[in-house]
Length: 196
Length: 275
Image (cartoon, rainbow over all chains, first blue to last red; front, side, top):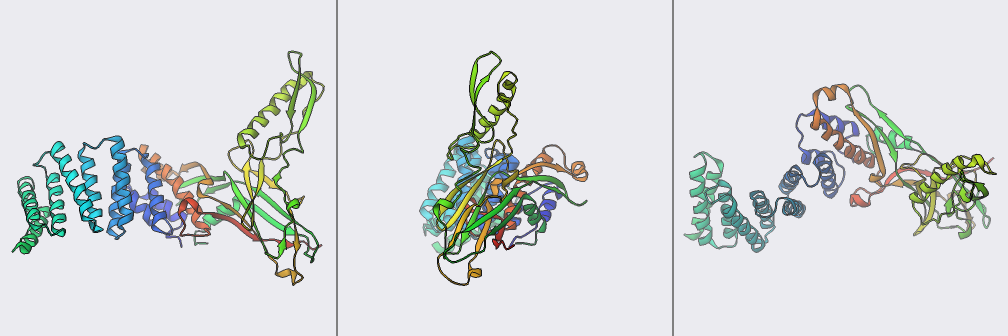
């Protein structure tokens, strides 16, 4: 059954000053997730065009929403689509490409394909070194994610080194009460517990 | 069918479909008829409705499903409507403005094969205009107007009978596809049983991409609040929303990949035509 009527969907579309296309598409489409995703992407393509940065942002946003629902294969497909557009438009030597690679690695990791995810995280780190530098919090995020990946592969020593490196960067670049620092510290404690 | 009654109403306005057949008799042929016409639907909402728009269909398929105990003699199926060859008239000895003699094809449907697309028909329509211009000095006057705007082409799909409806020299379906004055095929009951049990179901289907949404205009309140690119973006998105909701209104199978989903615009049963 339809989640909303034509009127409700159109009133919703024209109501807000800003619109989250991904959530709007999922809310107002009927049936299976595949159909909802297609509808959301058609909306975003109509709004921005398929090779616009806003469309890529939409794909990542939609993938994140779908991932949060535990639908990893669908999220992975969306992250990959975003990367394909990135590669064709901004190229692979770009911080955005690295960030989106990191997203893809995360959902691959979440499906237990750790080696595959590791390669993607490492690629994101390499691009980060070449583009944003090693003092950037985004770079620290890539290191932290690889550290967690190492933890799940039971490579605790390497996990510790990566998480410590990430924490140093974060403490230097972010306010002391930033949630990324707290998360980094908690992950590091978990790794140290395994090592001891 | 969902609660979205306006979506359903739009679909109803797009199509008029009726079907009837001669009373069935064991071993006897009964003529089967349909009357099918296409229109356009204008959505002009209530005060709180943010936009207005118009809907037309680019193409559609008429599907006839017969009881398996009804035989359809192959020769009785109408393969193309209007008939491709019948209305061709060769105008001989027509003089053009340079005084030379032309032999041109004109009036109604030209002799195009069923495989040719709408572009072939478009050429035919232009030929008719040209021939009218040339006819001042000619021996013949072209006076007939092309009245058939929709072509129906038959194909068999499993145990179903499909007629694809496509516009002739136009982008959308408008007017009569079939007026029902002649039969579409004949039915012969293969068994001697209660003939009223033998059903003939007729559906009109399309894909969601077959809806053409035009003339989308925002109401005054929306135009005052959303401007420029923000408004243009919403209007473009509105087209996708309308297509999605029309498709949702009467879906046959919801779980299929949307690419393959059929939207059922009309679904009726043929009734015996008893005087």
